[in-house]
Image 1 (spheres, rainbow, N blue to C red):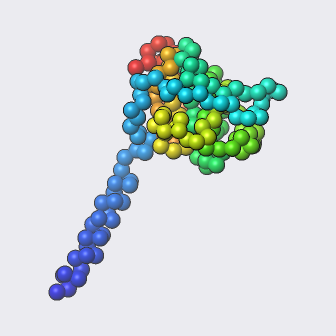
Image 2 (cartoon, helix red, strand yellow):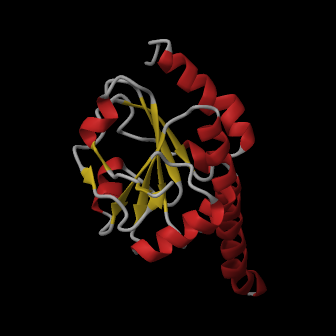
Image 3 (cartoon, helix red, strand yellow):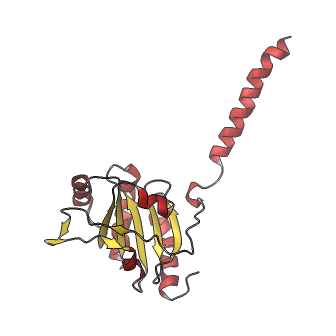
Length: 186
């Protein structure tokens, strides 16, 4: 009789153990993307209202801007995103290495976005907004931050989930950008 009373506890422990193992396995940055190899979504990204650099407004961008014969990193971010703060110095480093970065400010208000970039620096040559989150859905974004490398024809060639680290820049981002700049993106 005591074995029957213990059975639910053992079943619970077994199921909890399976869940714990599944949470520890796998790499969350390797989420699949159906967008790899496809053109970036045909969306326009209006500029963040009032965002300026060197007394000039920082423009938003369109999907046509992503296909102007240069390799671009598109970064989805938000001022309320803690991981975006962690990633930010690495984006500044990428910009200093000559990588054009277009930012998409996700579900944010303009004043919060301006404060965020004013406090941490602006790594973006263009900053657009995605106020309702529709654009992020079209790109297949799971959460903030996420970045995409776009080849010179406007095609998505790489997706990075989560904050970009220095190691990611050295081992993933820059090798892919160099390869794409050489015309060898796949």
